[in-house]
Length: 444
Image (cartoon, rainbow, N blue to C red):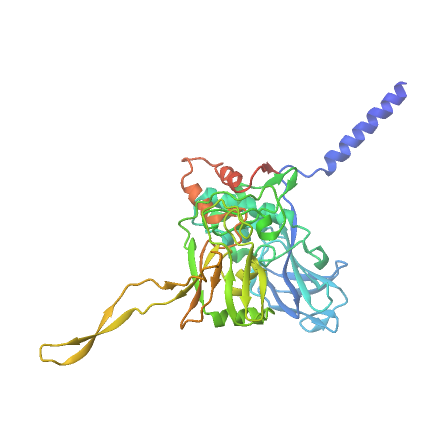
């Protein structure tokens, strides 16, 4: 019996040892592979100190001095270094002498971490991958997403959102050979040259902190300015996310809080036709009037963002999503009203007769609002008819900038400006306002 107990104890010790031996240290971050250039015919490489290009089997293929420029290209289906083909599907840039702050330059942009060049997934170009600690990755992101001059608590909220978004999407481009890209499809990342001291501090102050819902890291969407009220996820992208709910926003100081764009009926006809909607000369736009949030309307979301909008022409009609119309017409957001107006003259000429009986004209400026067109008496209020009057225009009067989901950056700024003095955890209040029911967790 003692022997059996001794065996059990030894097995338990072995298991505990193996777990402790392979468990990541509490302060360890995660690495992320960023596809900074994809499917390029040629890229230019350099480094701040002497470097070597190493093949897949760790063989040294070429050696270069600090600041020396090296072209890596696709040539006859293989990688080539300065025009000379090599028998390796990938190249790694390594320092001649190990150093902690080794900086690599790719196409005149500087990067921390490691750089790998490989044949693209389509085998038609060179893909450049930056393998980097996720915290250093965020250094190059946060300062581009939010002003580093804003209150630190707002920047910290942005850092947590960006970290959560990156980790949630960390396998988005696995078929391309990396985790995330460096464009707006993921998050815009340009390396060291995008960094700023205060945003770097915000990243460091929130190291490892992420947002979770029901134990899962969330895609913490964010945008510039909602226009007074954020939106439910299903009303923008069709998928219900219980943590992305419409809430009141405090973004009134945003330069894009209100905006307006005018187009002529002829311009609208052309834009629709180019997009494949050949409905003929536009006759009416159908959408309910924008009211005060929260709203309950079949064609608008809780914030008032347009879910669907109709266009009727001489040859037919089409019903489009708000996102489609925003893209087609180059609008700041889907939170807008539609009016059909005819401009009034800025001045009129008035005939006059002077004391000598001479006749003439005097230009008098007038301040009259454009004439807003109304539909036919039997029309519903949501039908905005185009009458064909001279100089008639379609006016989109809107609010906010972006999709309106999750964190509003201008709203976060306003909240942070009213935070209690010395409160270094107020960023959590900001996050819990814009992401409903989430847990704020330190992952590492």
